[in-house]
Image (tube, rainbow, N blue to C red; front, side, top):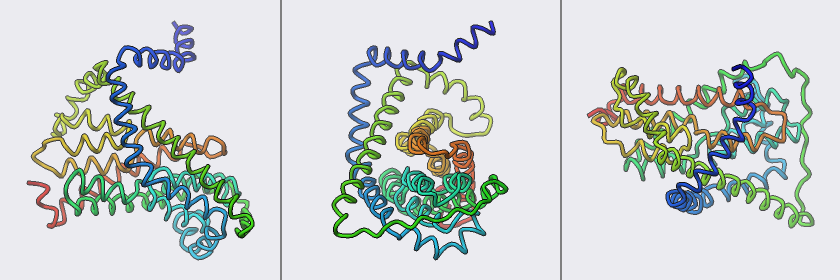
Length: 343
């Protein structure tokens, strides 16, 4: 029995890949539809919102801007988050640009020796966040038809990520005590401008294509899970727990979707008919904080060529999801402006 279990564990990933390939054939019609929908999301939403920021961050990495920002914010970042001042650039761009720009910037910092391994792991826990365009535009206005809800979710999202950064300042605080020497990038000249632009665009396109691949992959996975009734079985499994805490069981499948892939999840949560709309908003806050397994795998692919560990990032995103939902709950139930959500 033990030998069988060891063999199963050893061959689990090949078995999953084989099952995935078989399901592609068995459910080809629904999978093609899922791919078309995923590509539509990628082309219409992801590329316009992320590609310009990816190019911009790549260009800025060839300048001294990160170090200038780092010197300016050093007295805040070190005592508050126990990271070098250059981390302020990662935090700012991570909030403005959205997933997974923060992870890409932190990985570049580590490759350039702008931070130690431990500092990079601390930075990664709170600098990779959902962007304001997605939270305000997609979630607030498009899904909930309410700008105020978008502002609330953005505020609690940023507040929770800062809270995580403060808490993770103690992550391996006694390790990596050697002070790293910041590498100052050479100033970009007109002579090297063409080369810098080419490298930045190619790197940005590579990152965006990688994200598109993950979106398509998880779109297919969700389609397969629905066709094989696995989501239905999980719905039955979690139903008693949701009934016990008094939450509409219609949220189970949307939450599972969101844990796998963020966009599909928040969309499904927003359209659940529920007497108390505050529950929809709080669940969306949780999913936005966590980011989904799709984003997690994107981050793993970005940091794979560095020595940064993914473990603190996973813990940080779980903690951010919990804090974001708690902050959203607290504001809704204690701010008279949002009382209409409780009706």
